[in-house]
Every structure is written in structure tokens, then in C-alpha cells.
Amino acid sequence: MRYLILFLLSILFTQTSHSQIYEVGVFGGGSNFIGDVGSTTYIAPNAPTLGLILKWNRSPRHSWRVSLIYSDLKADDAKSDDPRRIERDYTFDSNLLEISAGMEYTFWEFDLHTSGLKAVPYLYSGISVANHDNFYFNAVGEKISEGTNSWAFGVPMVLGVKSNISNHFILGFEIGARYTFSNEIDGSVADSEQLEVFSFGNTNSNDWYVFTGFTLTYTFGQRPCYCNF
Picture 1 (cartoon, rainbow, N blue to C red):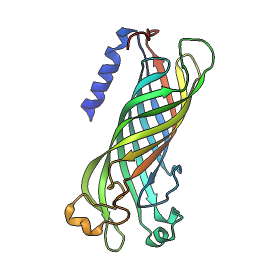
Picture 2 (cartoon, rainbow, N blue to C red):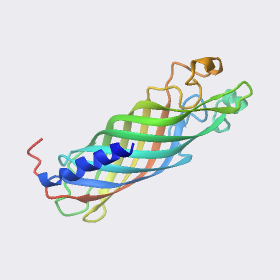
Picture 3 (tube, one colour):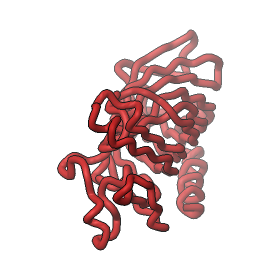
């Protein structure tokens, strides 16, 4: 993990001499889980989320983006509208660390080298991979840790709006759902085959999680030439 972060930073700073513009900043907000445990409300942040964001603005319409986000992911059957889940009463509190990379696309030009206040909506998508704890629920509904971690690949689908608040700072707000190719984040399918007897829920439906929050980035670099892609 440490070497990956250093590699990404080296790419960012070695490219400055090519007259591009960059952004580095933070993400702060909340997360919620959508799966076989807890509420099925799509946007309902219930745990803190913090992260780092790097962007390479290749044109006034699109940017390459990398993020590293940590969240304390939570779910509670008691918060569900499903009476079967309320009666079951499962709950979990798990750590999740996500690395994501992809493209951010604005609906119209967002040129930071022209004067005046600008506000634009944007979309972001790419690929993500999230490290999470492995656990399962035993016969009496107790959460049992397996003592291991797994990586869940996914696809981020983010909608947001951002605006320049000074010559170098950009403030944004976004809601980002992550569809994963895993059904193990909520413990409904144990990582170990010997524990398959404790599987429950819809095994054909993979897990989702959602990050909702604000971004604050600092821009730097020379005025870019957008003619070379």
C-alpha cells in the first residue's frame, strides 16, 4: 500500500513540467452499506469516511482521478423496513479501505484559468478495489471474525457538483455508489468454504456501499495546453 501511494505521487509531480494542471485534496463525509444486512435505503450515511484525492486535469471537460478512502462501514437490521430483518437483528461494524482510479467528466467546460466563479456538475467512474474484514454470523446471530481480509473489486458511480471558491481551491459535493463483485462484505457469505453452512440472504445479489460527502482540492501547475492528449 505504501509503495502504491508513493508511485502515484511520483507520477503526479514528475508530470508538472509538461504544463498540465493538478489537484490534490481531501474527501470527508459518511458511508452506508446496501446488502443482506441492514437498511436498504440507498443514501443514508451512518459512519464517518475520510480520504485523499489526486486529479490530473487533461482538458476543461475531463480529468484522471485517483482516490484513497477509509470508512467505518456499518449496518443494522433494526434500521431496516423489512420485518424479517428486524426480527433477525443482525448488525456489523467493519473497516473498509478503498483505492479507486478512473475518469471525472464535467457536463460543460470547467476552465480554472479563466476568471469568475464557476460551478459544474460532474460524473466519475472507473474501477475500485476495497479491502475489508472477513466475518460471519453463527447460529445465534453473533458476528464472528475470521481473522482475515479480502479485496472486493467494484465499479464506482459518482454524481457531484463542484465550484472554485478561490484561485486555488475547489469545493465539491458528491454521492458515489460502489457496485462490488463480492457478496462477502456483510458476512452473508463466509470467506472460508468450511463456513458455507452459515450463508444467508440473496447469494445472487452482490454488495453495494455509498460514500456521500464533500471534496476540497488545491490546484497547482502551469496553464495547460489541451491540444495534446
